[in-house]
Amino acid sequence: MISDTIVFSAAALAATMVIAMAMLKGWQGWLSLKSRELDQRRPDLEGGNAAGMARIEIADLKERIRKLEAIAAGVDL
Image (tube, rainbow, N blue to C red; front, side, top):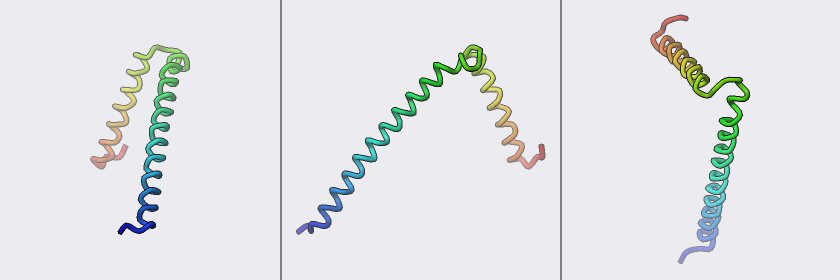
């Protein structure tokens, strides 16, 4: 038969999994809330429109990629 220890261990593991999943769902909800708050406040903070900021961010990312490619190729900057 199944011992009491195995039943207790399985129940504790199941409870831990349920708690972990609930906490993960809450964390993801909190992150999406903060993301929405930042998206709403960003144009006000920067003093510009979202399209202009997106172009600046893309240009910054392209520059970072160029630097990383140069590092990978062994070129000193």
